Image (tube, rainbow, N blue to C red; front, side, top):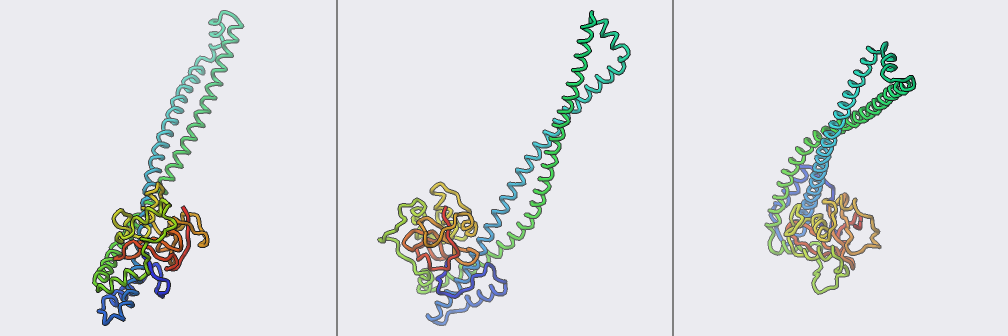
Length: 342
């Protein structure tokens, strides 16, 4: 959504219920004359800004929930693999230890006769020495093998412990997300109510009022003029959507909100960018306004609750407000919060 910079309208990210109700009440009030249309549009614009800001916030929370749930799933799988490795390592160690214990017990029982048996079986003193040395080496090798299994078992157990700790933390995150999900659903219902009220007021505008609403940002007719960035793939994709309707949270192809238009245009050119206006401005490489290039994304208003795409020659294409199709306007027709390049 957007507002002309000359209008002095509040741009806070959230508004108290009483304040919002007061704004809507004044919007609902019948218009006495044509002079009141601009005031009505200003009020609708303010409400639209708050609703759009809340919509961006909800989209961000949805992304956060999805990422955290994916993390829980990933960590649970890693923990399962680590537990399996630890169980196998411990099993191998226990089995080898049992075999080693059997050898030790057997040698202890036969220790008095071992030297004699070794000598008798060997056939010669040198063979007896070689056999004794072999048995000693075998014992040392068994001890080294046991030490290796001990090390592997400890390592597997440590991995398992770390995996269990990670899953515990992920489960805590998931529990926190349940609370966030409840908050999200409450906000979504509140937003749906606000959107419904706003749409009703816009739809109730007279033909003259609707035309003023559509023209409030002084749109530029893009047909018949030179668009410097027309050769850019993302600009071409965005410009192809001019005239399509605004849709809350929509990412095309038939309707768009501000950040959804950016997502769509870049996706058409094989690039994925964040979904919300705030994340889009945070995710790109900052660009000074003096160095803007076609395809750059410009953020608007405190908190970056709106975005548009620079198309060159001081113009942006953006999805503005409900009832207003995707249009081209001057890039500085709204208060700028920054610009980035992808």
